[in-house]
Image 1 (cartoon, rainbow, N blue to C red):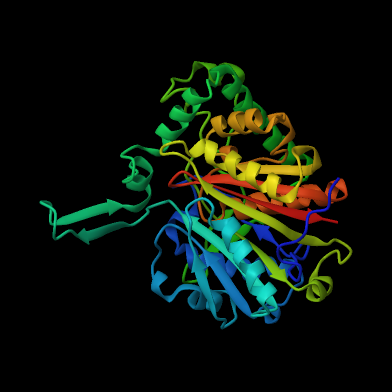
Image 2 (image 1 turned 180 degrees about the horizontal axis):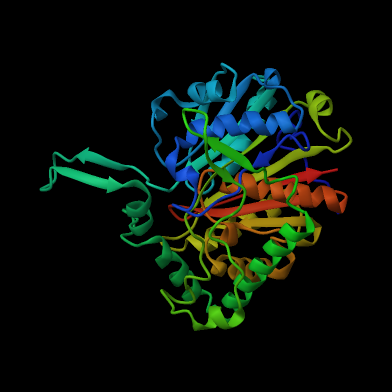
Length: 398
């Protein structure tokens, strides 16, 4: 196995200083009733407390979200106050790639020596997403309202197509078979429930309580509400919404948060739950596919990443993807010539939902936990994002 060089040799992700909320489907939990940024900040405080890491350790905060929230203008400094620390910081946003890019941005801050312990906090609430009103002085319709989540998912202004249309177009390009797509979705659900039942996600998912302003219980976020067991017969009976895409082979909107820390090698040993575990940043690649071919963009990014590092899929110990459509995984397996059964072994966004901002943060945390359980190795994270973007990153656990 070749040894790839690290792009941020002075940055580490300390093992075990992370956590994610469950991702309840939109409008199914108390998360629909709260300011998601405030909830995320308070949840990060709670998670770090459980990990025995004092918030006094933090000296910078990078947040990531995609859906506007109340007081968003005040950005990371406001959210850090909800964490319990008055910190500088900034906001990252790139649709579904937000969580991964926020983590990489934290690695860059540490590598530059600008900060020693950077908190990464990503979150989104699709429930009751806001409607913006935009003055359009050069249009016949002088005022245009835009429902942030639903209008953007339903219409790409660059191509005039909807998100789901990219899956159908990619399925036709690669001559994907509906039966294989259903098989992927069925296995992904089985993988998720097996991981939950085995305890593989116990160090990832943290139950969190939500209180009213009077301090009374409003709800407890302790399940990925909206996820249910599914059968092959149920999948086969679903109507195609586009080529090879049904309600059972695409993800669903949800709410949630996820957080982790990035720091120096020395600090990582101090605050890690297992100081002997070393998690390095290796490389990143980001590409843009042809119009309306979003599901193929991630695999192009992965192929470029492997070419640059001199690695192959045989060198990858753990692979996890953000896959809003099961079509994504079929295309990835074909292009990279590997078995889609060998990835996403603890679950994926196809099953547990899609709150955008924290999606790839949770994906990364699950993958790192899996790699540690295996004894280390290269960890590949990849996924698509709005605008036919594909992003991928490589980490090394030893």
